Image 1: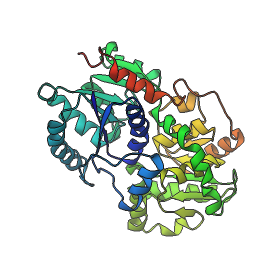
Image 2 (image 1 turned 120 degrees about the vertical axis):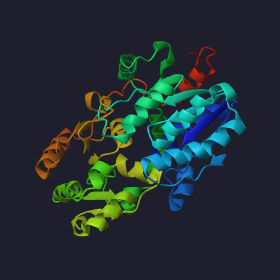
Image 3 (image 1 turned 135 degrees about the vertical axis):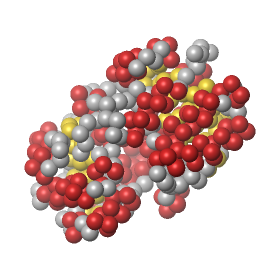
Length: 369
């Protein structure tokens, strides 16, 4: 069996890393395709080293662009690679443009290539069609032959959309495989101390979603809210390139003064920072999951989450919407009152999701439609 794994953005690599490792341990050939949807040359080598991932077999180098342009570039660049490699499985992860683009190409060429499509993290839903990721999730799930779900509620979403139950397999959260495997190495780096922070005496913030950072009003509200939080607890903000550009464009640089600003961090440094935080404020889906796994209180700066298990079974809470300084401070205070708490891990957050994913790919009945 030959398995092609596709990744396009940094969160994707946390998901493919344990799958690649499990394939290798079983002697199964893997082909890694990096679409280059998100690419930072300064961070790329460190990120691959942090996750212990082999160099990509194919780098499509599609770069940034509008959703339409980026999706089209991925499709054009991926088609010849798929035809040449002719894998048995094309495994796509997450919900970025690369996920949908490569699933669409593989679905149309299934008969010619003889491949099937598997979607890791299938069935997550925000019900917010303003999010490009929601479009990508729903359409990828319709295309995939095998839907590998991270949480039990995902099956209900898929069956409600007419997906045959025979195509759905619960495997658990593969991002937690990576977290559990690399946490000791992250702790050895002592990242908080390197930034002058004392363990459990600081907050971490991340903000990058277009709906939060592209508009001057929304971005100002978030930065002012983080500044208000910083009056009671130091706030460290690794600054996403999109956010940095928007801050400069809107002339909001003065609002960064109360915050500790760092450049984007590699996986181990970011994980080490999260692990020792008192509270995290974020609009990242992956960080909602990581904080639940670490037992760190999290405030999500979004109207809804496609990962409700982090609220119902984890340490996450949604800030009151629409965002306001008073609302963010209210959610922050509640999170501080909770404190760090080790709760039982949600089902499937046991570091063995990749094993179950590869088991599903090896099932002779998988992929039949």
